[in-house]
Image (cartoon, rainbow, N blue to C red; front, side, top):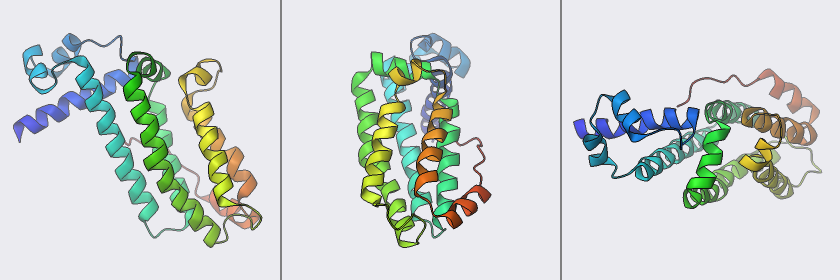
Length: 208
């Protein structure tokens, strides 16, 4: 139990430092000092800094998948689910710096691809279930094809929520994410649902 807790502490501390400062500027010496551990103890759990990074990214992916699945599988109406989803992802995006994303893509391209595959194969398939629900509940306009909308949403996320596009523009990842949802959903929701959705205005809280 103590070893499991030590491993979790290393991941949590490294996650906070990586997200804030990026990967290249954080050293194992600094992590060990902040944790009150020796480097030898850190290396017992993670043989290298790359292994620490893998632990952080995979922990984050599992966490997000559990949270998104809980939202999608709940029995709440679509607009409440969407508000919960926006709150979750908005809070995460506000904590993950652009520097971390750039470093991950540059120094760990294999791990970056793993994240992209995870987002496409796990998260987007779960979110698509919400779009199907929206169509069934009459939340989307009757002339909207949910499958086509899903493609537009997917390509918008892939095209905008990446380090290259974000670094070339002044908006933050959080602002970009919120804008994608606002622009897309303003067009597909029925008038009645749009009013209800604004009532459930997302609030961003600590999720990680």
